Amino acid sequence: MRQRRSLLDPRRGLAVLALVGLLGGWMPAGRETPPAGAVTDHVIVISIDGLRPDAIERFGAKRLQRMLREGAWSLEAQTIYPSKTLPSHTSMLTGVPPEVHGVTWNSDETDVRGVVEVTTVFEAAKQAGLSTAAFFSKSKFHHLQKPGTLDHTQAPDGWVHLLASQTVEDVVRYLKFERPNLLFVHIAEPDYAGHTVGWMSGIYGWAVRRADAAVGEVLAAADRAYGRGNYTVVVTADHGGHGRDHGSADPRDMTIPWIAWGKGVRPGQLPPGIRTMDTAATALWLLGVPIPEGWTGKPVAAAFDDAARRAAETTLTSDGVSGAAPSAPAGW
Image 1 (cartoon, rainbow, N blue to C red):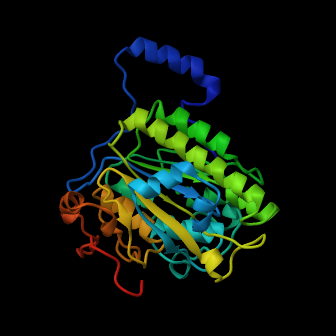
Image 2: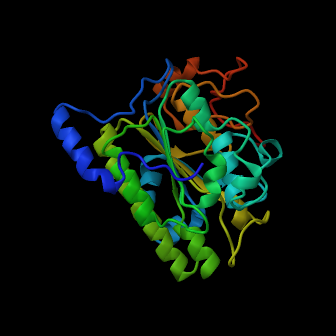
Image 3: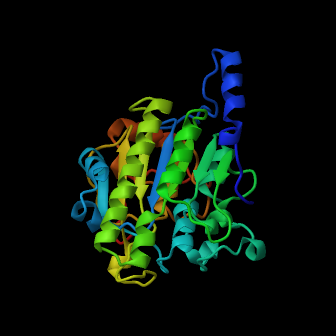
């Protein structure tokens, strides 16, 4: 599946505005009612490609620093090995490690290998009757665009990579018209800078601040679309990096930030043990959707307040086992 355009294509903007004027009382679409047990109606997952946790403070990422103060966080979460973009994002969005989802390559090979075969977080949400959208900045994410699982999705073709300015502009435009229950946004700048100049370099720091500003734009658009306090955000990364590369088991490559912010969140530092697979499970848990059988990811329930946990008590895994453990077991 290649990039799909919605009614938000600028070439159709005038037609859309005319239609809105005719409808008068029209409201943004895409808002469905989550199942019983939902903590929130809307979850946004933002992945900042190549963001090292120590870069947030080092380079003054003000929006992320605010989310750390107001949210639940870990700067010691772990990605999978190999710590590369496509394998890691596949684990982040399918709740299983590479030995289960089978994606170990890191390029767009969709024409040969097709889309991922395991259940994605978007697929589980759609099966529960919820609306989904994903904005990807790299063509390799075509592997995650399973037909029928995303109400709106876009990713570039070929070797084109979208900058945050383009991706976020599209997200902001989309949220003027749609209110998806599950929204994924990929921001790629830090990874580009790391490969080009080096992780933790001055240019990398500039890219981190650029990504941080993009997060702020997404949150402002979400406030307008959903209403402030009516959605929950998870900000994380696929990997870190050192020198001009990543992919190894080096802690600088493997360690990622994990921040929950917004509705239902209990502020404070989270216990160790969070893994990238837990992001998908947490998103479904928040939306009241059962965790698919066989997922190794678990909801990071420790990030949420007692009221949120009580609301989510009815959310079970598809095999009937509760996926709402209060904290990650030792050794995760």
